[in-house]
Amino acid sequence: KAGVTQTPRYLIKTRGQQVTLSCSPISGHRSVSWYQQTPGQGLQFLFEYFSETQRNKGNFPGRFSGRQFSNSRSEMNVSTLELGDSALYLCASTTGRNGELFFGEGSRLTVL
Amino acid sequence: DAKTTQPPSMDCAEGRAANLPCNHSTISGNEYVYWYRQIHSQGPQYIIHGLKNNETNEMASLIITEDRKSSTLILPHATLRDTAVYYCIVRGYNRDDKIIFGKGTRLHILP
Image (cartoon, rainbow over all chains, first blue to last red; front, side, top):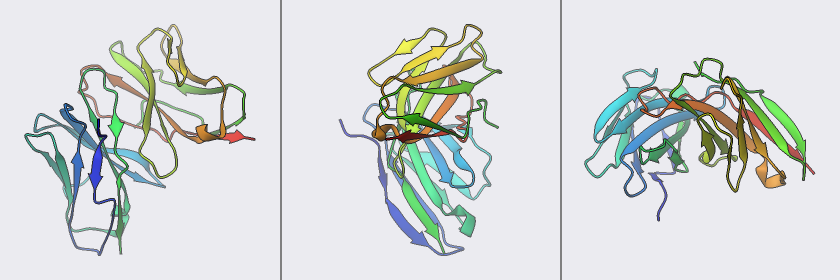
């Protein structure tokens, strides 16, 4: 079956703009989590959604937000982009039974 | 803060067993140990997980100490394709905790 799909794979924005990233989980997976990966900070947890409800949130400013739809697809939004938001944004889905995370290939955001 | 500590890097000769340690001294009774690896520019890939018993699958073996405060991931016959960053995380079955990845161990397989 198809894996986790993230779109777009690459994008370039300028400071002050906003961006929306999309994640389609594996069919049947109800939990989606998001991560930011940068060379300096490593892989950092952003938030997790389960059945359209945010279950957990990492230590990121309110400019970072997300949501999950009834079909389990998820989006994350970053408003008022800063240079430091340049990163690889990863999405992972899980069935919720044993916590095994299936990751997508990520969306690489560059902020100029 | 990450609940696990791992050495930042390790080397292993091709064909030998790679043993990657992880300390999780504050692990609680309902938390599992998970291992993932990330090959450059790809999303992390699940390897194995366990609660308290040793586990083995087609990719690796996981050895968890009796007190559960540390574990070792074993790649029995390392190949160049095993060069990656390996992450050890702990997570409860109820998944109410944040999913926290540490910096991982960068494993270099030497030809």
